[in-house]
Image (cartoon, rainbow, N blue to C red; front, top):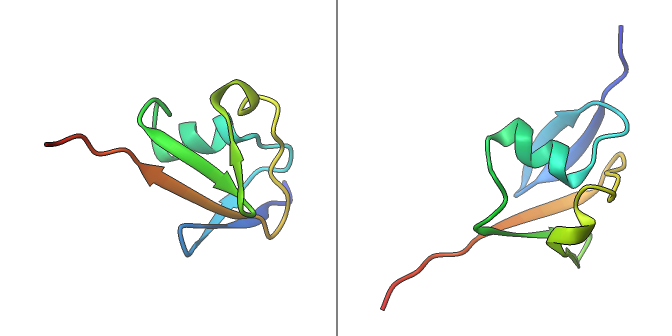
Length: 70
């Protein structure tokens, strides 16, 4: 059986397969990533870095949704 890692996603435990990137996480939760900011352990992960940023056991990930309005 495949070993999983667990990250903290917006205060909730989220299991992921080892070697998962930020893009993989966004796919798991059903986000295209276009309207979210991703913060991993207090560091903003820019969209161009999401495919290569590996998530590790215990990482704290915050997804911040951009909301328009006026």
